Image (cartoon, rainbow over all chains, first blue to last red; front, top):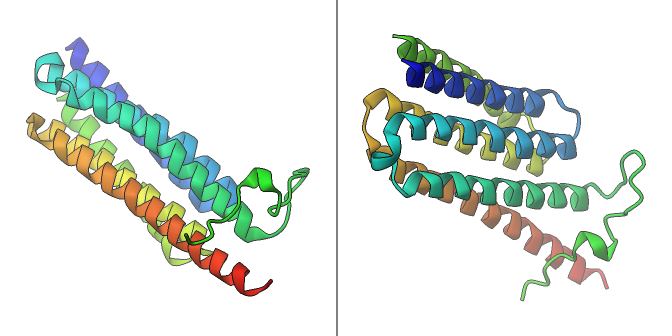
Length: 115
Length: 95
């Protein structure tokens, strides 16, 4: 009973955080802001949903693959979000707000030379 | 009983999230917005697979979770790299 309530809470909280990320992608004004909403919200929500699945399956059935999946989400979603935001900043060609780093700055990474 | 209702409510919420991502995918002003919406839809599909796995009560969908998230990540990175290379090609024409 307690495990059931815990799984339900994990699933509902994860789905609501994913809905929050989708709302940010729908409503925020810029590609940089949308990438920010994707990176944080999807990581947290998806890890909550996978945690609910792990509690449901138990340690013997979940095994090694489900913690591997959680670790993989933690590794890949911030990397993909970082690459997306870097591409958005490089393509925008302007600085937003009090950002003092121009897209042509070498700290933003140079585009590949197609080697 | 609680779990069934929670799974159905979570599926409804995820369906609404995918619809929001589809709106941004259709009406994104730039390519990067469409890529962000694509990433949102793929990761929502991963969460949907986890919900279906709880609903069916089998651990056989865990491999599907790994495969779908891997495909989404590699698709996103490949599209970003393709856009980078085309931009570098445009820049190399200039000087």
